[in-house]
Image (cartoon, rainbow, N blue to C red; front, side):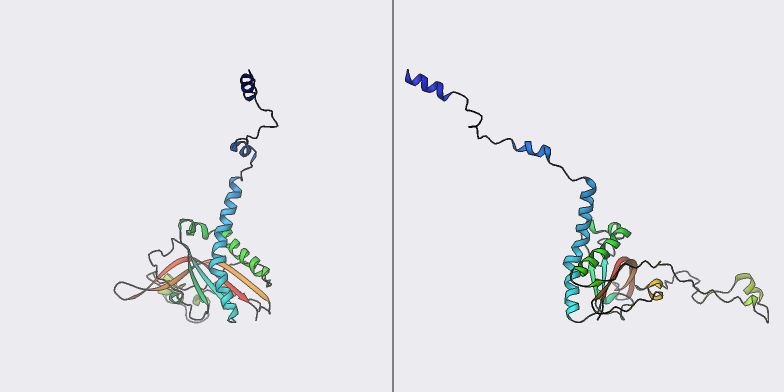
Length: 248
């Protein structure tokens, strides 16, 4: 008799307070708010821009500033630009002999192609992020320039027909007078190197001690290469040109 009562007691359902069974794991995920696609895109973009600043640009800047350098130039080459030239170096840049402290950064991976890095918003974000990092370190950073980047107007060739004296010949009247950089074959590139007319024409204020300036642009840069025949040649690619200056 006692055994029967004991079995009935054991078979009873435990009280609700006595139950310690945890709820299913998936019950909490119903109330979790997932980030939307736009937030995920912004986060991925910010991380992609921040990575070269943290791991490749800032260590070089720190070392060069400790050496007393006031200017640093970074040439950032996207993964799919000049991919057939894996051994390019900063010393191979055409027209870079008058600039010191040039660092060539080659990006890798399908996410670092020119389709991403040549976007105007990405270029501005690269400069803005670096300005914020410099400001955090104690520099008084110059704001982004709002000067329009229009090419300066070139002076046209003189009109010999309007001058007094002997009238121009029939050939000059028929075909005109070629300019000083006229190229009949239309194959010569007079813009080789890495300098632009806008940069050379715009004067910049001299920075004082503690000030910093960051300029980021997209431009074409030419490199000297050696062909399989041992001859010198040049290749040109569109890269990011990042210049950092500090006052001394």
